[in-house]
Image (cartoon, rainbow, N blue to C red):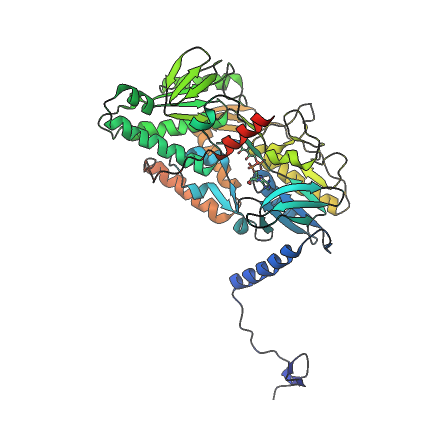
Length: 486
Ligand SMILES: Cc1cc2nc3c(=O)[nH]c(=O)nc-3n(C[C@H](O)[C@H](O)[C@H](O)COP(=O)(O)OP(=O)(O)OC[C@H]3O[C@@H](n4cnc5c(N)ncnc54)[C@H](O)[C@@H]3O)c2cc1C
């Protein structure tokens, strides 16, 4: 006979005997357990406010991009004690902006250029919303959720990783006629615009309409402009081969750059080679030239020349996310949050900043450039620094020597520097892809991206034009509004 115990079981006020050996438990599926745990978390997070101190340290990370996600991953890896990490971001996924040119060219599916945060970081408490204010004295941040009133969140440490936004100049007609290239919507819009203009050129008899349809002008020769132009031009050329009345050579694309060189993040020698490569493909590269105004398909250049173009892409630089101005922190001349070499904000021991929105000082003077690689490396160091500080140790200075810079030029070619060596051709193109596969924060995303790229080597880029998307002028429009109000 089984022994019984009277432990912890009550039925209608009576203690009933329970077997010492507990009955076989019906195991709750892991997924259900996770959902239940998440619900409990959500209820608690909704209740989190300044008046409610937490019993474990709470790190609030604002921004779910390269920098923010790397901080969370490194902190979880390095800190064995209990810590609560809350990630606040207006998107529930991490966007791999360097993959946008390949989204536009159809080399990868849009959803393979993003990683869902809840799936990639299951231990983090994700709050969709925008950081809207910071009170270092009370150690609280204000979060504006997608719906409802703003709320306050208490923190032990807060990390500002808000990234950047397109930097617009006050050029007449820019807001109405140009589109930036920093979101999935913009990448898809440009792809659709380019493909629909090939159809217009195929069917129209009007020479001006044909010229406008077959010309695209990219303003700004940094990696955003060059990569987007190169990948889309490659797609346009391949797509045009199937048209009856459009020859690939008729596609006249122009890159307008104010400086006397493109790709400022690469050595001049490589940048010059990029210009030669682009020109060989029939791309008109104008250096030392600016766009003065845009009037309904007509671009006025600083040289006095006028170009007819239906598609205008603005890729002339970025500026720190406008929200950083609302935080009351010291900013440098470029509007980035000033931090010391450990990425801590001076005079605010519990506030840290990194990535595109922060001026992280180099040991030899100046600050690190706004790149995905820097944001990721800084994130790893800052995660480790937070772990050290939570353990009562001093944070370490960030120092990163040679950085790898690889720029895709479409047509299975890339160029750049790795460990100080200059590389051009297919090898850096493969290395760039391998790097971004490795950076994907979840195994499933890594596998999907690698499979898609492998299949893409056997099949050409997909030239399907999906239904037209509304013109996504958001970031550029907002940037212009800011520039006007300055
Ligand atoms: C088309 C394109 C191509 C590029 N190619 C390259 C390349 O080849 N190599 C390279 O190194 N770099 C490249 N970059 C630059 C690179 O993408 C950035 O340097 C990198 O994303 C910076 O990382 P970050 O975490 O600082 O910012 P982001 O990755 O931009 O992340 C910022 C995060 O903050 C969130 N956020 C914004 N506002 C708020 C708010 N108020 N509250 C909370 N969260 C907020 C955003 O939604 C986002 O999730 C490219 C960029 C573009 C646009």
